[in-house]
Structure formats: structure tokens, C-alpha cells
Image (cartoon, rainbow, N blue to C red; front, top):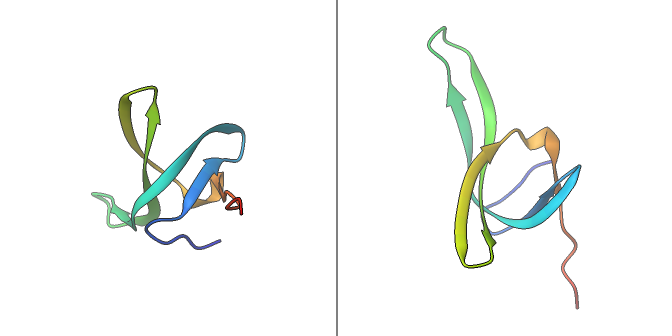
Length: 64
């Protein structure tokens, strides 16, 4: 599945809704690369951010 900046996603195992802020690649010293998705989310008033493998994320359906 591909993600775009602004998508709302969630870990496949559950958790808070997160907003995608960057889609790119992580480069390793040995020359390999891996896709990453950077996300932000709130826990109360605390802003959190982290990067995830795209395989462990799912898009959250927008409510009408």
C-alpha cells in the first residue's frame, strides 16, 4: 500500500490515528535502503512523531 503526506493511518495492531508527514527511504551504511513513513499524532496535548515501515500501517477511513 502506498501512502501520501496527509493520509491518516493507524498501526495494524491498533493505536491512535496518525497523520503521515513524510514518505521516503532510510539509507543504511552498508548501502541498503528501506521505505519509511513518518507520522505525527497527539496523546492528549503531547505531540509525538516516529517513523514506521509501511507494511505495519493501514489507512484510516475518513468519516463523512
